[in-house]
Image (cartoon, rainbow, N blue to C red; front, side, top):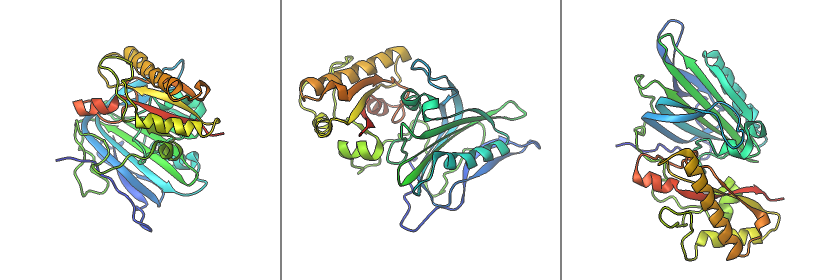
Length: 334
């Protein structure tokens, strides 16, 4: 049986300085080994998910005209995230030491950028990001790096780094994709099995979603999980939705607050069609907020990213249902 490994630090307890992340490569001598990347000594591992056979979209350039150039890296995929409790820690301070270690290990940097130079909103929502609270991404303060390693036999490994921060903590996401015939990377803690293909990264049983207003200000976004759309349609179903009432109360409480409503789909069908559908569904939510709940349109915008930012796997019916959603993203409070 496989499951998500979640490690929450007890007060005063931190991880060891060096954590084996399982990035496999071949050295000049031809022997495969794992490279140990050093993370800050007070880094707390918040989530680990490892798939024996999977794919991951590696962004290789900035967002242009709403599109992000991406390559599909296939093999064993390990996703991990950390929280670093420290005030004033910059995204560059988180990123630079790991970048240097990858370069020293023989990786080629394919692309790196910071927030606006990445393409801002469009770039962020083209990335697969571990959901909050395990990972946090500030739309205006994040860094991204993608790297590649080729061994003598033509086998390719990739590493993708993402860093961001809040006022009190830094956040780090590391994704490694190694050849499928290499030894499966082990969980950092070693006390629970790693996830296999098709396992879900949905919240653990008993997790309680944060109230909409709290989620917006703590995590920067909130999933409007109770929405229901007519089958095969962008029309929002009838009825009163608690998430929309809460969102309306939040927006009406301060006219300077602005949000983007972002539609998401599962991975069934083509990208263009899914982006169009997801944007229409976000627009339908905007219309309900404006028409029925009195929220000024100037405080909202509607966007759609199709299947480019899944919450969990698209390999199961349950996962696809979770991925079909609309999120509210806080743009500013000033």
